[in-house]
Image 1 (cartoon, each protein chain N blue to C red):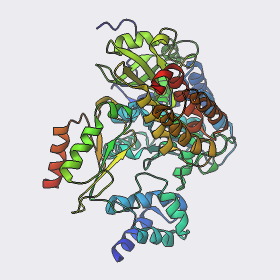
Image 2: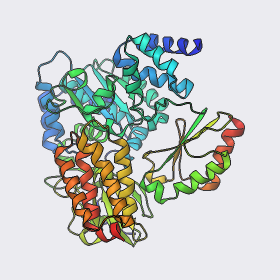
Image 3: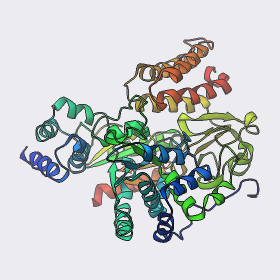
Image 4: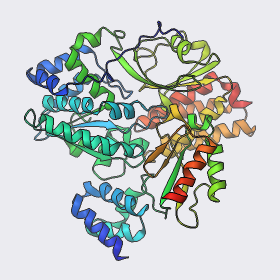
Length: 386
Length: 155
């Protein structure tokens, strides 16, 4: 197999972390210099939404408050994503160090890692690593990291739902604005970053912004950790340069019979074979939190969509009507079309419903159901009917 | 059930009696008891000076905070697309046959509960399942039965 079309990168998992030395070097700089390095690198959030990390830190630091927080979002729940688990398992001290740099910049004394309940088995090792880290930086920075466990709710990966959950409540997303940089956890200015984002921020402190900026495209700088699964002979976790075309990806990871790739999980987009060439993986094309699922021609896209919709129906928090009722009606609708109780044209009505959900839902969950729904129904309409 | 009262009190002492500590306490009870009984929930409400409805409303939001009795070992088989493609239905069928229970049920000896769950984050090594906190991956029928038998006889 040739690997020349996709650029493999080894920034994150390289285990030569002298975290203490890097932190000392970083803390010798002013907060403005650190933020400028992160801004200069072009790093955007790796959870999927892609907000510039430097700006998030800057806004939070500038917000007047007596207390600020940094939170590591390790509620990795998007179907097909498993890279954060690997990062926390292999290089936890880099995650802690990224949080420490952020804490220094924004003036936070406390940080939290919100870890999904499904990853509780990571806890003993993570606690050990955390104790060692606290000892290591004791004289450098007044900063403590605590771990908070989730309890099996996908929606808690949504930042404001995560705050609610951390405050001991149902994980129901809040209205925005105010954004977390103004009023997050305990209504204090809060930086909430994905696990991978924090590690990249730290690697930028270590290597400088240029090494990161050299990789990727003007809209999507750097590399990214991808979780590859489905019909591929080599499933797993890969750090790749952003901005690759999807047909190059499939050439390397497909099984020779690839029919479609679901980019970005259940909340992402389905790209059929005929559009692989024109599709770029990155913020200028199809963005992803890392989930890449490959489907070959033996798979029914109806089953794929049905599985996703069942997922959303169950994980919808139920707070707003477009999402709660919309998910139920989409499932009922495609089932009725499949059984022949409704004509194929009914799919157009369902597409309109998904568009409404995109506009009217309160948070990213309901808004992104339409991504997979319209891309699967749009590209594989005949499979929905026959 | 004075035992549950003791447990709730010790968890409240450990984590504190503010609303913010509610999830910690509920998680602590589930860790010990595998589920939240009505007694446990009302006891938490009393300790934290909250309404029982608020405690119940919070608990039932979270999949892992069960409010129905569960076995000592809760098996959660991943049902999301990749595990589905890799044959989670056969795994569930095999466990059902082995434990003589259906999906959603608890065995008579209260040792096992069999459930399905959403994506566990092991799509590259599916099918996958959790038994309590422990993850088992790359399952096939033989491997799944072997694991279950080990729990049934040795734990």
